Image (tube, rainbow, N blue to C red; front, side, top):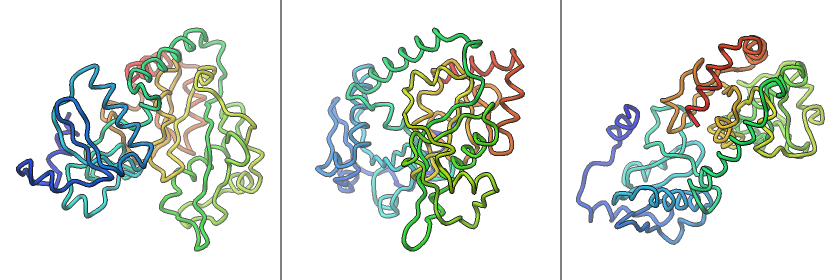
Length: 318
């Protein structure tokens, strides 16, 4: 609640009569909820994450009626609000903040919690399936390696790499290189070689060591030819979250990791989501990076009390 209060207090939009606020309406971003109905502009459905947001609203309203409210919804992974909307728009709601809490906007759940048209109801059913699968797999039967599957999508363009957006892909490359160097402890791979495309140009602030350069030049070393269903993540004791490939912000992968009955490891990055103030490294998850991931797996593996604490902490987040 402290972060919510801070975000609301920091909004530049002053209090104003409803008619004045409505005059700031934008057909692509604005949402009006009145009497349990949501109203949006004709361009709002053009972005699928906005449609997921509406599903989230509808399902949440069935559980508890929503108040009348007027706001802008910005679904971009960076959490950036266009300056013109920040200065003259409606209160902005964002699903992540790539650079941390100081960015403007009020954090709300990311739209992938409503991937199905049934919104949070559908997500709760997904969670129940994951809980059931996790219960079928005792700790002793799970793989010892920390697990991740996804894509590496470098932002190379004709005029060079967009380095500011490539932080997530850099983290993914680093983790994949650890998988090649330490396969007994790290199982981080792209779902297919065609989904493994590190930037051809190395960004000045993202140097590659010899293993990372080798993997970047030979992506088949860290690629598999299949995707992994969410329920099969429960085959692993440790599950890893890495920053997103689009802009180095949140990754929807983290949504389901808390429900798997394993230890959640989160790669250090400045991005935040709406529930992050409730997270506590060492209690709900472990914070890791290139230097610490392998050692963290080794250290936790034989520490039953630490394992129990982290598994219980992840379940509380779920």
